[in-house]
Length: 149
Length: 52
Image (cartoon, rainbow over all chains, first blue to last red; front, side, top):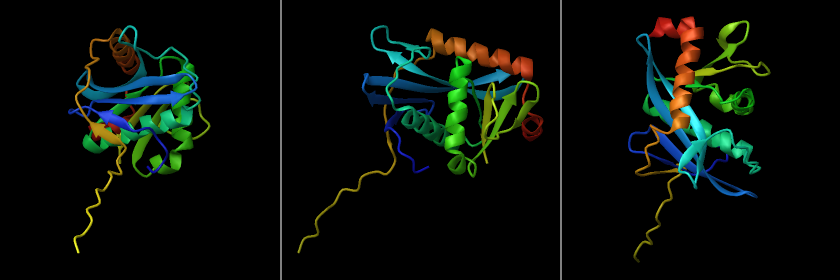
């Protein structure tokens, strides 16, 4: 994906990613974390994404940073998804925002970059009354499941 | 004439390094619990289950 994005760091395990958002509100450290989970014998990987609070050292994704770099951040998170699923092609990644607004941001990010994403990833979205469906632009989803093609 | 050595910059926008482990961070612990609860309630797509 040759979109503008932040340079990010990746851990030795390829499970943790960090980058700095830079804008009018200063530099904000973003953490993207993938953790394998198991539900009744089905393994999936949960995507966690939030801001590092430098004062507490803790993560928060309810804070609204307004650093005017939304598209750059979404492109960077998408790049980590591509890197992670490239390393672990059998992984199923689950993504859901902490609030409906955050989930909608994921949806916007996927829709904006759909032409670049679609050849590489299968994305299902959970619709309120329809259940899991292949991703379509313009539909509101509650969560996403992502696998490598 | 000696060839000038030009160091190629990596096209990949990333650097590999040791990082803090946030596995016990309350935010991520809560996120994992929410994800489990959602998938227990709503399940996985059929086509995904057939691949597994």
